[in-house]
Image (cartoon, helix red, strand yellow):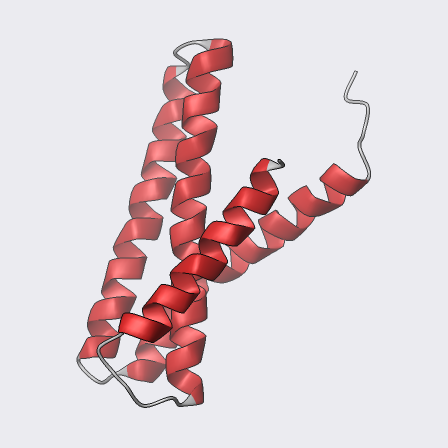
Length: 124
């Protein structure tokens, strides 16, 4: 099973859980957008963690690469927590902007990785 497919499944499960057990029972468009962007951010954190584990298994300890992944993971987790806090306080538009700042690049990177998975490139 492809790691990209597993991350997509994780994002969908996170989205469903956020919509089902979220604090706001009303179903409006802003809540759905925030839940979707937060799900993408959480899947991004999981994907970066997976990448760090794969790097440790196959390449050993690579300090700069692992450090950059850890910094990216903490930024994603921080903006996700901030967006959820803003949503809980009723500032939903600010939550969309905050989570979208990090989710949109993650969506573009995921799309590029799917493209590379479908059209492999010989890197040698």
